[in-house]
Length: 320
Image: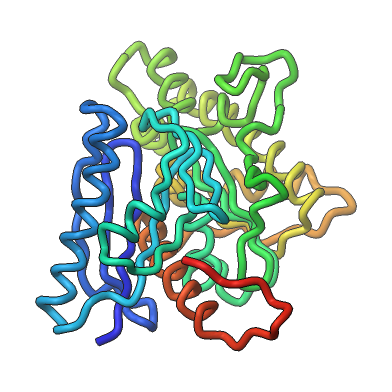
């Protein structure tokens, strides 16, 4: 059976899979990233995990994987195959594509940004299927975004497209690690809600999921914290839809696990704010934490399709 290796590298853990040509997850595994041991150890863990997946494919199907795809956080130069910078992994300018290809015996490797890769999967086989324009926004530790156009994700001229979490929604507000004040992710990310609810409830261990449960039970303090987050998120999303005019807004990440506790007030808040803009469908992500792996698999299959496509003498060479 033809298959590819897919890796989704996070700050603390890695998810990996063997993915079939139809997008089916044939085999799944998880490992710790091992970031406490330093950036070189993280790279070694990735390479070793990929090699394990290659052996799994050989044992299960009697044939090696056809390609590999890997999604990583931070700043990514997908064209050159370099993981430029990731604060939570401590690396800079890691030639990850070349290192993986060498470890996997010359296998072609595609490298992608984690959120854009997850967005690719949501767009093709998840909540955005059939939408010609969509915006995928996972609400996790921070907030990022993936802009879907047709069958692809727009990375921007410098690879920074979709960073909706750093839209300033509260000018002069809470300082952000990016250097601005009042960024969306400082008000509407899962970590921001967790911090606000821990303070409001007096429980330092309380998190966003606890806040959602308190909202559902009618706690007025929780309702205020939740409303602050929903209002900020709606402001950021309306700015994004004014610029991008998506047909569908796909909301994922930890905060989206609250279901209609989030989506009912969020849809209402977005609708209240639009004037001339067309109101998009606001829907939950469909693939959960498998989106990154599925997207990495799609990157690998896309790479094979590009390698096998006919080229004219004027086309640039396609490389792994």
